[in-house]
Length: 241
Length: 256
Image (cartoon, rainbow over all chains, first blue to last red; front, side, top):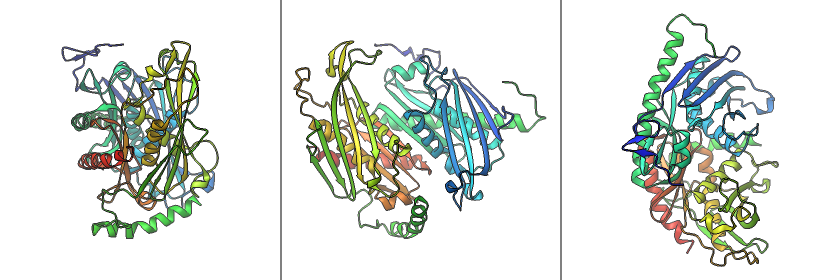
């Protein structure tokens, strides 16, 4: 099972430990949704749609003083090697919860009583770090929907392979690595809105991993702004796929 | 019902924060102080291992049951661990009957990662015959009274239930079953700009966010989970981590 994931300071895909995978991020890719975004990060392909704010049904779920934020993270059955049974499982229920909690604090939910904002994250092809890539795209989709936000949230995962901390794990590193720590933070204020970890890290490694994640999130934040500028600072282009 | 609870917690938030600004928690505890804890082992005869933890007003009962199963194809010589949690309606007016909701699932998955990633169980030792049969240990978390901080109570009861496992009466069961580590979890809530260990229900209802650290006795962190709709500054995360290690020491002493 021993597999070297780091050879002479380079990762199997040629990256240095603190390097992100190639990222392609695009705002406004769906016609029907109020806002949308598409992200490719390594071999991840993820679509995010935002609907709302709109009236929440059934009405007993409405909050009289604020909107309800709902988030649904879903993996397509063909998004992973072994076909995934369609529908929610325990993992996706938990991810939907932490993703919602990662985005809630940048929204002004009190502006929309009795309403709902829905975020749908569809993982079409998975290559580790899907929840955080989903958050990066979801922020762009929220902005694309014209929903006021305090800040953009970007996410990235930091892991440990062969005893070394590495940024933005790919699937192989995630499978054979010693730790995985997804982090999401706001771009301007650097507030951490999602933090999970499993594996083992010493206290010192945890501190360093947090630093590394912040660095990665900053780079993704720049890409988020770029994606929005590309969509909105020039004449809209016809968008395919 | 749930609506009423949200309104009440909003009303209670003000006095809670005011008290914190004066350096006091509403129940008189210091910021890093846990509520009184008691741990009772072997409380359920029908489970091979069990434990009940009382943490302030919270009561959590955990049963651990090993079961013979065929192994997963990708790990033919390894046993398994399956953690489930039920938030039974008897434990709180906000719990509803039905299949586990996102809170129950999150609770089970935090405890699962805290146990699994700590490597306290050697899954190879749970192999009976490679490719044919292994032991899978079911850890079932039953919340009986929800007084806040279910994660730490459930984690403590789970590890105590695993330590309590005697048997099953089966020649395939290795009599020397033991745990390599005793991981415990410490949950810190953020209220305003205060960090509070072991939030009570009132504090939980008013908190912005929480963070849980699962830590081993050798200083290794095996799982972390932020929850709640608020955020943490990175400096607050590091402060919470410091608190977690101080509290973990004390919690682990309960396990003997």
